Image (cartoon, rainbow, N blue to C red; front, side, top):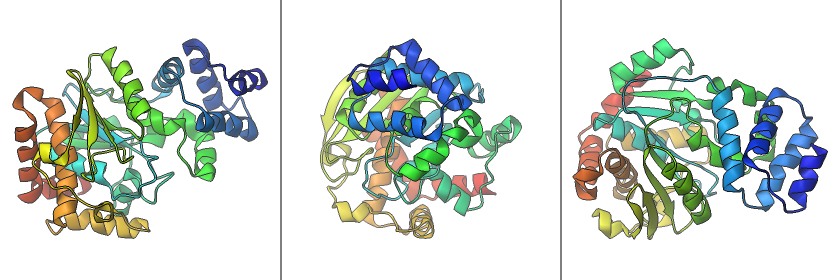
Length: 327
């Protein structure tokens, strides 16, 4: 590790094979906590390269518990780490998307740099995390969605998890989350916290067969916030859109703030699902869910995808899907 750290501190990067091996060694417990913390900290001070990102991704996918399904599942998630403390927009969007007919393989974790991650809110509502493939298949058949709590599918990461929690800020593991889904979904909507990361993801996905939509809100959110313009990267290219392009209102940052506790975040989550959300809260969920539905079928156009998301939320289908999964 000493040689690796000296290379990185000297502003040199790792090649793909070395990055893959280092992450494998991190996961195996080869390094002590101080060494692991130093390694993670380096990437808070300089950008990760494509080769490093690919190497880290490959190691995590090789070490994970795989989940296989014949359906064209989609993950709907953000990298997190934007520091905006929004409510659980991606998780809510996942239920809207599944209710609208797109199967979802949701990959999530506890919040590290936020109060409530997707796992926090799911656990609050009594969802039992499991890596039992039969249970996941049953969930998918019943509710058109299943939830994978990341630590159960990436057991090799148990040595790193405490350090991430103690640091309490975004790390390169935030960047890895969306690209190490154990179900290897053929469709992916992902929001990222920086424009540079959006372009790196775009490069990675171009090398794959995925149908993808990558979002970066220009006000710094890792999802569409409707507080201003956002960038969108897809198989068809790059574009910049405004809330009006989605037929949705421009809102204020204060309209989409999450709670200060898991309980408060869960209350917002439930309020929106039950049809009691504010116009702004509903709109931002519809925006992100709509873009996910567009990802699954770009021929329908954005307007139709937004309309499908709106119907699934406002007519209660997303709530019923949530109840099917939880119960």
